[in-house]
Image 1: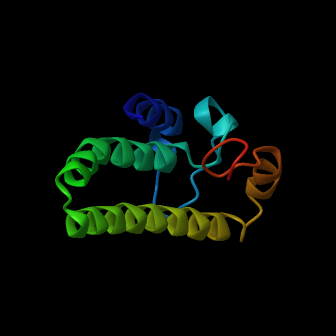
Image 2: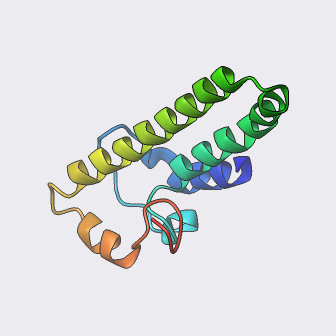
Amino acid sequence: ALALFSWASIALGFKCSNLTNRGIVTHGPYAYVRHPAYAAKNLAWWLGALPTVGMMFATGSWKAIAYSLLALFGWTAIYALRAITEERHLLLSANGYAQYARQVRWRFVPGIW
């Protein structure tokens, strides 16, 4: 997950920005999904939480499991909403994003979403 995040960050280069269009990146992992860095962050959080959730499951700490899963789902939702917001913003101008979104169908995981 960290390697995917690094690859996405390198491919994005100086074009990374919060809601400022500095050009559409179509190479690297962006040729397969539109938000590979967000997907990689979420994957890293979920994989990182597995040992803790597993230990809580083994000890029967159901309340702790619920809080952990709530936090994971919450961060996942935040990044999904962030990606949707960014896409809406990028679609407002004639910058090629609409064509890119048609070519790269998947937001986060190829074949799923």
